[in-house]
Length: 268
Image (cartoon, rainbow, N blue to C red):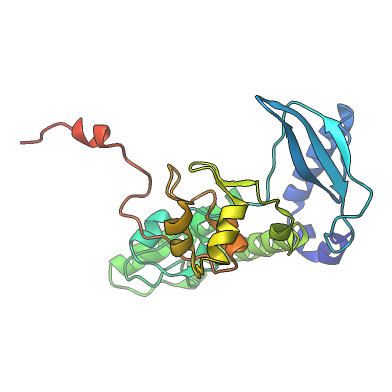
């Protein structure tokens, strides 16, 4: 129901609408039932998944009492949107705007000599990434030669970038998770899978133990200390703890086993 209110932004990307219609037609062709305004509230099983409990949501995203029902199944995929990878930019000291790298009209970050384009500046699809990359490339090429770039050289890419960003913002607004989603998580829900830290332990760290930021929660619970270094669980930990999602500071973009470093050839 929220989609018609953003019709102008969506209509500016007819290719995306056609893609979505294709997905819907494929589901219809295979007889896959789609439950709109529903959510999964629990998964059941021991050694493997055997069923899930789903419930309907009201217009504000709250659970409707008496609508929960158990559905036998053997596979469950859950998604709550996408987050950009900003590891390299953060390591270089680039500032973030929300969860994405902050850039100007030329795709420049606040670190001199560093441009950013694509997913790092916000999720918006391949077309947006290509438009941003075109602008960043022309800007970098001009400035590396000591000249000011002419925005007229990327006018078409600028228009494509604006349309794609507006479309992505509209979808984000329509499909945003309910504001109170963190309150629904039972204490035994595993939030940090690497270290098997539950929602109850995170709440304890932020409550009785007085943690006021994600780093302190990490030290008290080990949430974010595992293989992914918080890339998966950090947003959920921050929401549960009621503190802002702070930027990470890591010397590497991905964990590197010591064995890989030791096996490097001796250049001497």
